[in-house]
Amino acid sequence: MNRLRVMAITVVCALVLGIAQTAPQPAAGQTSLVLAFVPSLDAQRVLDTGSTLARMLEVATGYKVSATVPTSYAATIEAMCAGRVDVAFLAPFSYVLAHQRCGADVRLVSIRANLPFYKSQILYRADLNAKSLQDLRGKKFAFVDPGSASGYLFPAALLKKNGIDPDRFFSQVVFAGGHDKVVLAIYTGSVDAGATFGDEVFSDARTRVAAQYKDVMDKVKVLVYTDPIPNDTVSFRRDLSDEVKEKTAKALLRIAQTAPGKETIDRLYQIQGFADFSALTTTYKLSKLKTFDEYFQPIRDAAKFLGLNLEDLVRPR
View 1: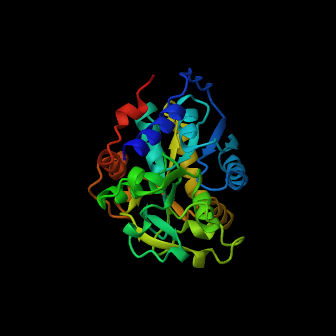
View 2 (view 1 turned 30 degrees about the horizontal axis):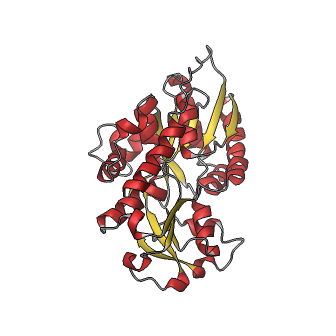
């Protein structure tokens, strides 16, 4: 996986590290927040829905809240670490990188199908009649983004566990930039297979394009699922005041319990609710957790398995 690993590291480093910038200091009694969303799906749709959620947060907190969707997962991390973003809906791998780089503080994780975990799936074009991963040899393959756990990290680890080096096994590997974009690339024949979020019960990237492409479930099929992945996060800039973090997190928990809030977060990222650390250790019985951050250890384990050194990814240059 040398070439692909180098490509992933290069993309993450180039955008996450970027040019060193001095983070602005929060004003005393800060009442405005910038809320960022990773572009895991169509960016305009994410921005529209994220702006709705921002308005709900304004009402619930009294803060002025604006929404933004940076150009990539890594750009979202860079913006938070540079102090241009206060709160971010970070994918789990992006959170781990942001925590390592600048101490991003996770306060909430997403809940789907009453679970704090989800999975990734390998999809393929139905007319290939693929029965196993080996049937994808020599095909074109699409990942989502180097900063995506379900769109790169875990499916890449699954391929490696099956003795597959994408650089040698596939004829071409691309990063499509979004889960829906991977689905559409397979549907239109631009690639033969790819990786997106998806599980056997609730979450499936194909549903995000099904309204426009009604036969997508027939033309794009699931080949295999990965191991469970810790869910995506609501994370805060490290030097944001604890009062603002606490008030914002509690407001999101309340919003997620209202009918308009439920509709908005479902439309945003198919989220059904949020859990804080106490909920993870009680409601979801993750009793071995000593800190919130330990919940994300499978992300680090997958990165290590792939030979991705987090210290190298986040080291200032």
